[in-house]
Amino acid sequence: MIFGSANAVGCPYQYPAAIETALKWIANHDMAHMEAGTYEVQGKDLYIMIQDITTQDAEIRRPERHNDYLDIQYIVSGVERMGYVPYTGTESVLEAPEGKDVIFYKDLEGENFVDVAPGCYCIFFSDDIHRPGCAAGEPGNVRKAVAKVKQSLL
Image (tube, rainbow, N blue to C red; front, side, top):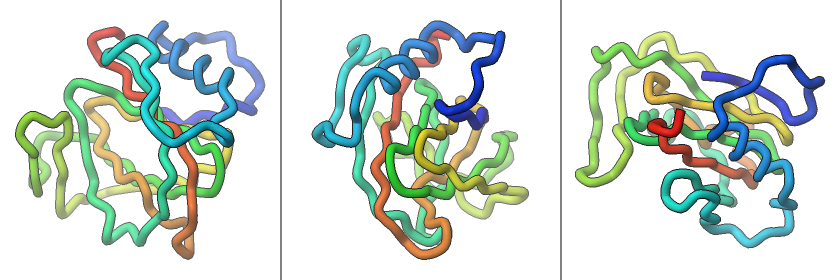
């Protein structure tokens, strides 16, 4: 998992090209005024979903992991708490819907949370179980962009 901010001072390192492409797309679009929906950047290999959600108590949200895509979860407005725990392969699977790139988990140990404010993002790879959509205090409205990047591009 990587936590970052679009407002941070530039660093001398670079992300892999596919992640840089997604972050540049996010930086170059006024997502606060765009329609919610899916925007293809590189077909099904890299696309952005703009979502309006209402956060919920963490106990209601299901932790998840993906095999094929990494997530860049970027907050446009509101504050969202996101859970994270490294995937070890010993976790209890709650559900693995056939034909979908998502596995849901239950009974996690050692989960940590971070409050993600506007302009900040988390990058979750296939070895990161994450719990998005959690309330940072009371439930609230959040506009976010979720970039889905095919991990084979890395």
